[in-house]
Length: 392
Image (tube, rainbow, N blue to C red):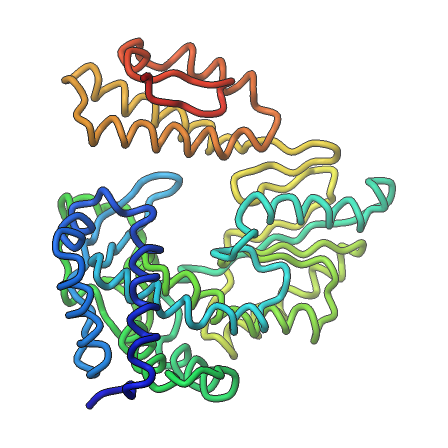
């Protein structure tokens, strides 16, 4: 049965083409993206017809392990499913933005890690009256967050939100795609990239293959990231409104509270634990509770925030060095392919992009000059140790 009427069909096709363009921005050179683009109109119109008639079902994912910045499991959805994800989030995001608090930073336009770091630094500065008075930092996170998101609870709240807040005339279609996205279990239909041995050492709490029944969203999907924000939104409002906390910020499941009273912050922990457990069926990570005076500093989102300065955490420095070594090994082994050159450019510029936000010029220059293989200089040049460019 068609989920759209004739008047809505034209708008929907335009939206799907826009979703495709949004999706291909960072994925255009992947095999799946190129395959989809080869017969773009046919593939896109087939996908549109499936969605309109309610016959669309998510396809096969690719599961693999990444080790940086930490070991984690990723499920990469098929390109056509990514187009659907972009369409869905494009429809919902304007309504989500109306209910999200200002200080949730993940997967939001003009937010992100650097914004979150600067906000927490400002919290500390304001709370301590420019570092003159005492204030304390409480940092907590959720144990196995993505793997323990309850799908039933998530969809129940999504459905209610769409019924009450969503004002467009494709409401039933949006709910249908939400349902299929939330309850799709990629472990039942996936290709393992690499080997099963790659999963060795990954805690069960961090794998979809070991989640409790009806729990878990795959890391790697746009819908997972945005739905995770939506899932935690009631918690944000609990902190800000019910508890009246002024200085609070959250990035995914890492959150920071700044307050002048250490004992007040300590007393918050059981209240936060109870709320997460009772309302969201989540658990505070027992080994990741940090409560210190602001002068001790705090690690947050890959940076160390201390009075009057912020700098890159040791893990990021180590990952940058290991990324260089990885690409050096390729250059020593064989002449890098076009794809390996693109991977080098993407990797190096990603780290330099992160690091140039902080006082790291000397670190960037020294790390690159001392460690990068001379072979790469035949093909690339570095501009002010902020960005690599291909030599013309």
